Structures are given as C-alpha cells and as structure tokens.
Length: 279
Picture 1 (tube, rainbow, N blue to C red):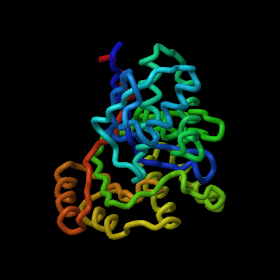
Picture 2 (cartoon, rainbow, N blue to C red; picture 1 turned 45 degrees about the vertical axis):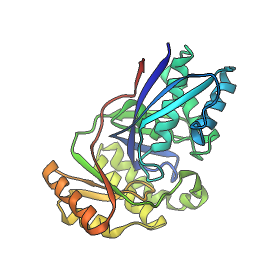
Picture 3 (cartoon, rainbow, N blue to C red; picture 1 turned 90 degrees about the horizontal axis):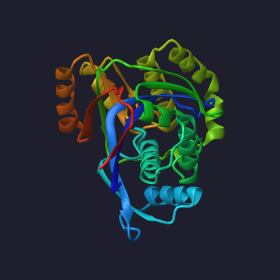
Picture 4 (cartoon, rainbow, N blue to C red; picture 1 turned 180 degrees about the vertical axis):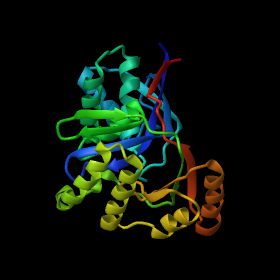
C-alpha cells in the first residue's frame, strides 16, 4: 500500500484522571485527519510530536523506513480538546497499518498510552482520552491500570467550543497538587457511573477552572445565550456550551466573534470510531 489515511476524534473531559487515576472523556465530531506514507527521507514537516512518535514506533518495531505525515484536518492544540491523544493514536494506527503490523485493541491502547508518555504529551498516558478518540462516545477508564471500565453512546446535542490563542499543556499539570482534590473528583465519578456525562463535564470543568483559572465571561455568555451546560473543557482553556438546538448555538457563535473576538467550532458528540483507510 502507498498511503494510509486515519481519522480520530477529539473530545472533552468528563472526569480528569489527574485527580484519582480514574478518567472519562466524551468524543466530539471534531476530528484530526492525517495520511502517512513512505518517504525517501524524513520530511522537514515531520516535527515535534509527529517526529518523536514515529521515532519511538520505528525503534519499537525495528523499522528503518522514513515516513511522510500530512495533516489535512487538525483539532485546535493545547485547548483541552484531546488533540495530543488523537494525534498520537492516529500516528500509531497509521504506522501499524502502513507496516502490516497487527495487534488487539487492548495492546493498541497500551502502546498509544506508552507513546503519549514517551513523546511528552501526557504524564499519565491519557488512557481515557485515547479510548474516546478510538471508540467514540463516552469512555470511563482506570488510567492507572489502563483498563476500559465501560463505554457508552452519548446523544448528539449540538456543542460549541470557544477558544483564543492561550494554550495549556497536559504535561505541565502538577499531579501531586491535583491529588488534594480527589474527594471532589469522587462526586464527579459518581455522575459518570450514573451516565450523567453533561453534568460531569460541567463539574469537572468548573473544578479545574477553579484550580487553573477560567474564562468566566465566556461561560456566563454561553449560559445566557441558551446553553444548557457550559464550563471549561477539562483543564482548558477552551470553553464548551451544550445547546438544545443549532439555531441557538449559531446565534451564540456570532456573539462570541462580535463581543469577545474568540474563535469557535460547532460540533456534535460523536459515536464514530477511528477510521483507517488504505489509499
């Protein structure tokens, strides 16, 4: 095969695993789309996470070839929308397919978690984010033991995510500091077990917002514009709003640009699994 195309989901945290090791993420129809193909030499475009991840994979499977990666659709980076996990997963899926390497889903998730730590995009492996990116829907995981506890479909209410130039990397999170809030995280965990994902996303975002700071003006605006739920996207700094209908969402989006000067993306919660296609 010449090229392989991979599409994987972005998402929003419903329970950040930084607190207790248990995590939950809900997939968004806000995908990354990339192609990977063999190259005679390493292209200059293969930089940062892409280069580091491919180098780790080549070493792991004793592959000497060089590869070109082209990203045609990207999730906004450093906003709390699972861009790093989706990129790491997509590179792993594309590399394995391109080189005819087969493995089970559990092995794939374990490998992707190891790569997330190895390429510096996660301090925990982000197992919950990887699962929602791969399976779609909502996933609840034990990130410490790398175990998928359950996955669930989530209804497709329209979602808006608003963001500016600010970024916040997962690798910068102080895990020892987060443990102090584990009691509060257990309340969110109970909501996850009851499949109350919207409520969990809101409480989780608010809790992390109290710790790291949040854009309360955007949240207040989205709620006043008809959002049923609004909070920071996990550690942020992006903010989400969940609406009952797209008309209200689009009206709110115009105000985000006019009054706040921020970018936004409209989306739905996604039940789509990662797609790998030979080209």
